[in-house]
Length: 588
View 1: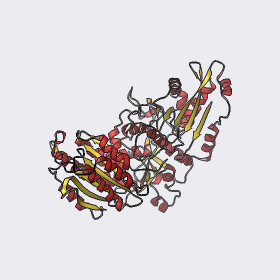
View 2: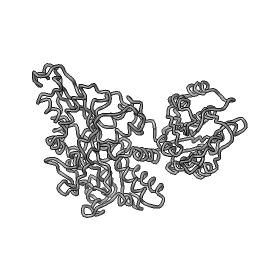
View 3: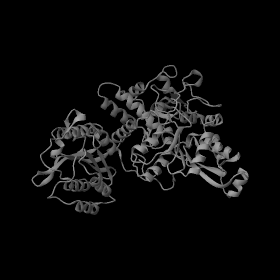
View 4: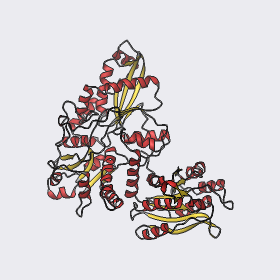
């Protein structure tokens, strides 16, 4: 009993009519009873277990074929009949469902739609999905196995005439060459599928930002420039991006169309199979970007019998016959080699030349991936490419004078201000940002002081830089509650539609203002002010070991946003970027 179902929202439009007909032929509509299945499986098994498998759309037909063969041969584990339901599922949709189940908030993923059910086995296109879930709050998310069952290199797709001007196929190009091309006075029109939602886009983003960081000079400026160059050509859906490649041989059309995009090798092959007027060249840039590695993840909580069935299915997906099924879908085996019938793009690393990438022995699909680098790239992208309105509120109580040994004995205040200053350079002029400090009795009986009102950075950046540079800790205590309430009212008062209106508050202590409002009063006031039509997102970053996460989280539980606490103040830079990247998304 095998069925394949699901949506092909991102990839289906790049296949031709023949491929669509073949995919349709793979769909088996199951409308019968377990009796019929048992007759198929044979009299040696009884009962029944249905194993639910969600696979990336381009991989699903190969998995469905292998599962169908297993069923035809009499699929059973320990005398129990096994049925396999393979669904074609976009990784971002399953990630949203898993995140919802585990209480994680993953930048760009958004809320689960309610129509996607978490499977027993998930085969996304990249291990980055597993790492991002684990690294963003899904602490109990520990899937089994995780080994790669397929691979597709990430390439830079270019219309062949554009690639030829850059020296393809004779010249070996690098990510530095691409960075130079997209950053020139007459830039190459580059695009990307939203990297918070697309693994190939994320891989390309990581490679390009790494090239920018290694470019010398002002690396922050180079990185931000590269991000914004990509952002002008970003698309939420892959088919929308592909539709912007040239559809005519006319030189004007080629010049005005999309000139480069990070896609998978499989995407390029599928696109060219549609016989477009201008074929795409696949450029295998150096250093090689992170490939799509299709990890076989058995999700937590699967009952033992299903886990046993999942193990047998995995073994079937590591055979030579499955390698040939992958080739039919323009995918490689996990070691980078390919099966019979694979039609490699010109210039593709080939098994015969020894160029195919082989992962180290014993290393799982996630081996070598740096979750922190991934989060920094995603956070930097979110900040550099989206617009918002934010009030930054920084604690200047006496405890912020505390020295940080890991930061050459700089004070907590200095480390915090440095992190905020670095973050400021990522925001473009469309953002509106203001700056407050707080302690107790900074202005008469008032706990907060406005240094810079919330205004567009286009005419506010210099004042913010000066305001940050002048911040010094006071001798006061932490007037957290009064300050939070007033900041919320201020941001809500001039709330702007179409943007995320937010507060980011840094503190290293608990509320210590005996003359101020109580916690109960603060929460009641925030609940009364909350307006679904004018939401204000509150992000609180707690520094050091004197903060109470429960106290801080009680606030963000009411307002939305998030609470982040670190005992190591040197980490607040990354936390700040990560916090800003948590933009609310519409349900999937």
